[in-house]
Each structure stands twice: as structure tokens, then as C-alpha cells.
Image 1 (cartoon, helix red, strand yellow):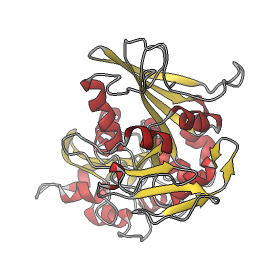
Image 2 (cartoon, one colour):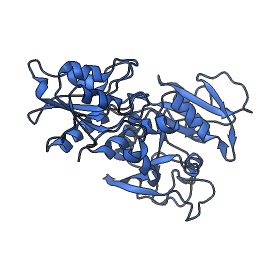
Image 3 (cartoon, helix red, strand yellow):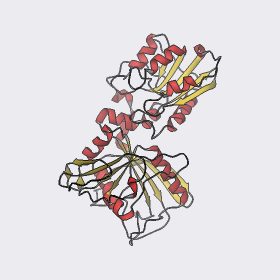
Image 4 (tube, one colour):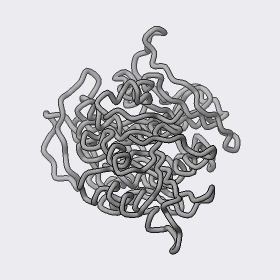
Length: 382
């Protein structure tokens, strides 16, 4: 087995690969979003990222962009996720790497998919390539937490997104919600839609606001939409049906039969609505690994109570509404049982404040030594 330490700039180059992967967010499911950078003598000669399903993976995308005449025997590829080694919609990336003549590969983290799970690394090592594993590994895993959770548990990652007043209201007492926050915060909110696979809302939000739930950002794409609608009350002409994207309607077994412009999924009931575990598993089966929950407060509460929420993206306005719908509805949690989050970032957006928080429950998924026991033995970079 051949291993090596990456060059001194490995963190910087893996950071560039992570940035390339971010460009693919929301466009790769059911595949992970991956970035790749090819370096010769400390200089980047090519970059790539995962393309939509059936098109090039990041490694092949980068290799296609290498200028003519570059000797790849002296090159190192930095890739955020282990190269695949099986035939799916595309041939194995390990084949393309070996054919290219690359001299070394630095891998961010192991792919948990059972047909890979360290085998891609082993194939490259057995062919004589120098391979280092584990550079900026937690970041690489966090970036694909939706894929990892889907493979390991059959569930997606869930991010709660909300624009709220200083006192935690998402609408005024008279129901007015446009706009709680300013244009800069709304623009970031649209970027979040662009980066997720699906948007989840409750029927109350649909009936109250008739939202289009589209992405109104330059170059943005419209995520799929999932509606929690126990009794199938959604209007046939709801604006969310107008965009060219999948729509999933979830209802109770007791809901009336209706002809609607989207498929209907009947799931079990839960004490406070529909069985969210069943809903989320349907979405994963359809390749939706990153779900953005946009309300309302009862939906947020049910997701939090079920421990499904991985991140919260809160846009806080300096206004105090003193009434109106809360960002989290329903009965209160006890101090001991309250869902807990860690602040990752606080960014001013005009007069508003964008808070990014992550659940403390995801630590084990971010630690591959603990959570990839089935992977072949690999030596991690020090």
C-alpha cells in the first residue's frame, strides 16, 4: 500500500476543491456534490465539479479541462470525496484517473456508498498512485451530510429557514409577512433554495400566502417542492405548480381522492400531523437528499421534536411584532429536552442578521473513524 503526506499547500488546494463542489449544490442528487483540483508544481492547471446525474463526475470534469501538453505524471489531484470505482450512469472515476497518468491523489473523505467505501482508494493505491486521505475531512463530510445520512439512515438533511422578527415572529398579528426582512436577506434566502434539492412547507403556508417557492436569483434553479397537506386541501391552481420542477403532495390515508397536477403520497398519521419519518424517506427515495423547510411554525416544531433538523438558517429583523405566528409553534420544550444548536456564523445583511446554526447531534456523522467501520483500512494524512 502506497501513502504519502500531501504537499504543504494541501489545505489550500482542498479548500479550492470544496469551493468547486459548492458550485454544484442542489444540482447533483442523488449523487454527492464533489469538487476536484489538479495541481502541478504548486500551480492549479484544472478544476472541476460534479455535473447533473448522468454527466461527468468532478474528477472527469477536471481531467477534461487539463490544457494540452501538461504532464500529469507530476500532477496531484485534490478531490473532496473518494473517487467512485463502480459502473453507474457513468464509468468509474478510478478508471479515468488511472488512464490519465496522474501521479498522486489527495482525498478529502471516504465515500460511504457500499460499492465504494474505501475500494476506490485501494484501487488507486494498488495501481501505484500515491494517495493521502483525510485532508479537511470534516468539511468535506459536512458538505455532503445529506448524501451520507441518506446512505446510512435513509433520511435527508433538513435545514429550517425562516425570516423572523426580533421576538421570533414570522408574520404580524394581522397575518402580514411581506416583508419581515430586507432585500439582502431575501437574496440569501433564494440562494439557499438554489442549493437545496427540495423545499418543504405545510398546507397552512400554501393557503395563507400562495407562495411560488421559486428561486429568484441570477442563474438559480428551482428546487422540488414537498407539501404536507393532511386532508389534501391544496388548490389546483396554486402557484407552486407553475414552475417546471417535481412537486410531492403528502396526505393522510383518510384524505379525499382528488385529481391534482402532482403525485400524491399517502403516509401514516402522527399525533401532530403526518408521519415525518415516512415523508422524508419518500423524498430520499426520490433522490432528494437536502431539504429546506420553510414553515410554518407547526412544521418547524414537528421537525425539531422528531430530531430531524440539522441546520437552522434564521434571518432576524430588528423589528418587534409582539404577536403573530411564531417561528416554532406548538407546545413548548423543557429546558432539558430542548433541541440544541451550535452557532456557526452570524452575518449582518443590511439591518438584518443572518444566523447559521448546526445541530449538535451530527458529530458522529462528521467523524469517519467512528462512522465508516465498513471501509477498507486507509492511512489518513497527518
